[in-house]
Amino acid sequence: MNPGTNPGVDHVPWPAEVAARYRASGHWRGQTFGAWLTALTAAYADRTAVVGERDGNPVRWTFAELDERAHRIAAGLVGRGIRAGDRVVVQLPNVPEFVPAVFGLWRAGAWPVFALPAHRHSELRHFAAQSEAVAILTVDQHERHDHAATARAVAGDVASVREVLVVGSPEFDDLAATAPRELPDPDPAGVAFLQLSGGSTGLPKLIPRTHDDYLYSVRESARICALRPDSVYLAALPVSHNYPLSSPGILGALHAGAATVLAPRPDADTAFRLIESEGVTITGVVPPLAAAWVQAAGRTERDLSTLEVLLVGGAKCGRELAERIGPALGCRLQQVFGMAEGLVCYTRLDDPDEIVLSTQGRPISLDDEIRVVDPDNPSASSADVVAPGEVGALLTRGPYTIRGYYRAAEHNATAFTPDGFYRTGDLVRCAPSGHVEVVGRAKEQINRGGEKVAAEEVENHLMAHPAVLDAAVVAVPDEYLGERTCAYVVPAAGSTPTAAELRRFVRERGVAAFKVPDLVEVVAAFPVTGVGKTSKRELRAALAALAEKG
Ligand code: OOB
Image (cartoon, rainbow, N blue to C red):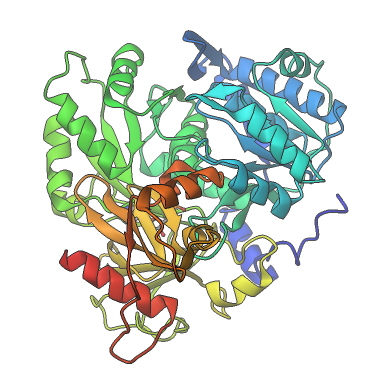
């Protein structure tokens, strides 16, 4: 056991009797990711597993080649002193090496901490510090950003980070050429990796997912999305996100013996080129991307006829867009409503059209417990359910939904009910069929076309500016993204900060570009709400209402 990890304190396990039930029902099978890949390789050795591009050149690996690479990387990592239980921040774009590198970490027993390519110094430093990571795995340059330099700067700031491993460097090639060796299989009930929460409070929380729970959601996702060995999944979104990783994602495709094609970028030109050349049958996008693809489909020369299913999720897919997808792209729409904390809902491929167009699906598992509770009470218990068909706040617990964030005891006390339900912060309505319709959000988060922005995180950055007395970040409706961010700012006495200056300031603090406020409004004072409350929550609600009125 790594002395840095402390099960029960670092992460909250499922109660023993609940875990026993999930094992008895076959949800949890006691298999690790490493053992799972070994079994898949035995079944599908010569089939293509991963297709990608490196420096513009095609890369194509079979299951056997992927498996061997993962074994070599695992041995190389262990040779570099990475031990079971060590955390390693992984910031990789959609490069083929992502797949063997992550399996290499899993086989070494290390926990990937999945950062997005958009994250910058301040976020990476937080992930590394919070997880006491020993290494950062990244690329050199990507989309004109020097990731290796950022990672090295973070390593300089966070004492636990001993090394920066750069995929594509001669050092990494050496590591990946290490002779494979037998390594002990980690505990399948233990944490396998840390995902990031979209967050609503100051800094993103880390989400501990186990081999047992995640593999259950992967197997079921592959089945629900009807993946088969001759399916071809296009990973269009950044692959370290839960959605393209597992809903059904790369892992779902592997489970079915299918190939994954990694798109270096998600734009229609790139995606359509790959759909045509690789015969892609299924992919997943966020609503703004679906809209862009629908538009581009009208004037493309590419043959998209292999595409059978387009998953749309991450943010609400409006009815109008939903209706255009099938006719424009010649495929079936499948809505997906998921969260890195666990619960994933899908419309089923044989659901009636009306359900597919108007709901965000139903849970993966019959053992996913759903409660729709009093939306006006942030501490509503799982018993405070609203009448059937009414809108309420969604609580959930189940075989792949976490019982607590990583090292966040204080936050967990409010983010979960005492009986272990996760407060999703989503406002939903549940149909008698069990289908869920997402109608809004109670959490202080902006959903910018699927990219999540925690209001408080951005407010804290703004308030670090000497000319800012107070800040409140709210969502404003946006035709393309669904929502954009608007920062209302009260200046410090005698200061006159400009919008451009404040946006630059936030960017220069080293945050993902999608968190830089789209709009900044400097106001003399914040409106006071009817009840005279001045809490941030009330202010944001009042400002959001104001913004909506235009
Ligand atoms: C996915 O995961 P996260 O962790 O980035 O974000 C989760 C949140 C949900 O709580 C909800 O607020 C929103 O994103 N969301 C949707 C949605 N799908 C996600 N809101 C409305 N309609 C939808 N279809 O976003 C994610 C994880 C796995 C699969 C798909 C998406």
